[in-house]
Length: 158
Image (spheres, rainbow, N blue to C red):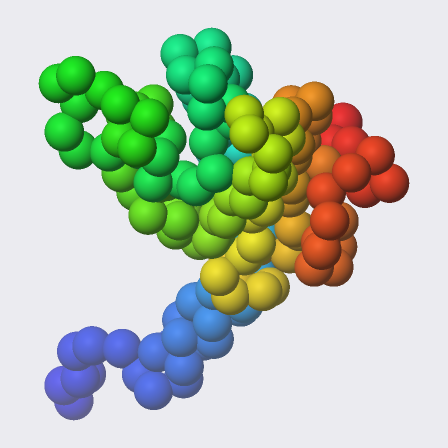
């Protein structure tokens, strides 16, 4: 009597079940790791914007702080100007980077003595779960809900 070669249906089903159990354990960990990575990249981008604002204010004292991300960015930087200072990369100047969208509002006085920068996840609970902001004190702050005004009432990031 000849024995058939290969795996039985039961053996294949057991292997598939083991693979599905491993995937069920690994996928949530992967998603949480991606959220953590996006959030830390967003905080780093806010720190970059804060540094760029200090440099911008020093370079253009008659203007003060920049009123938009495009003023901090730019593509033609020979020579840099107050409308295209090339202090941040073009992706950040466009307002979307690593799963977060960024917005910058400047003060209405001249020269501008204040600014607020906000960072929000593009897809909540997929690209991030926290909202971040900063203003001229250069402290990054966060909230679990949308931030309307960035001031000392918003919790600082540890």
